[in-house]
Length: 260
Ligand SMILES: [Fe+2]
Image 1 (cartoon, rainbow, N blue to C red):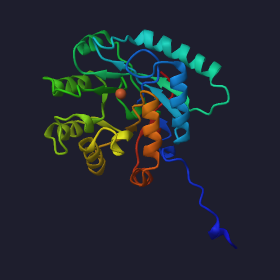
Image 2 (image 1 turned 30 degrees about the vertical axis):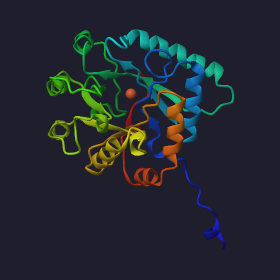
Image 3 (image 1 turned 180 degrees about the horizontal axis):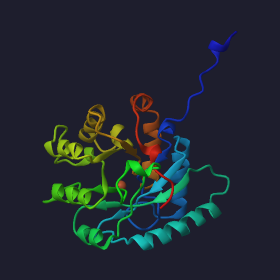
């Protein structure tokens, strides 16, 4: 009879997403985690915030991070084994795939022409193109020539394109014609969770909410790099506006298939 007095059991903030699809926790291959221990620490925070799965997406960004698909897959296998051997009784999410965050810049055409790209798939293969979903990013500093043409070429060559953190590019505003055209062309957008909490500043925060309100954002990612980001994720998980947004908005994170 006093059921109404029982406290409603609330799930951790990011539980509705199930899976994170953007993070840099494969140690020492980019500007992300520097060690197994650091990755484990971040993963503990991700689990506490509600993530059941994580997908690793190291930078492929020539010449800064000239990663190669085969090497990354091998490191991923080794890393999964090391995590299992060292996690002890810590609760962490399952690792379910490795792909990459490919910067469209110097060296990108070489990756494309060599077929050296790592993609995601949807659980239902009929929902994505033959070659899968490719996470791309642009320079955060300067708009390069030919981005639109490259996105179109990727689509013509059989990739679905996910543009990482569109809210973070200073050269695209909330009403950018280019971004609108990308949406018309079927490009998926992935916003960063930390943008919603102001981690990258006010402009990115405002745009992230506006893009979501426009119905432009299909995926949310943590873009975790290190323990400082993990602290910021914990902070974001207590943000009431984010909690409400996740209760009222559907994202496609949980539709991604398991496996490399
Ligand atoms: Fe990233």
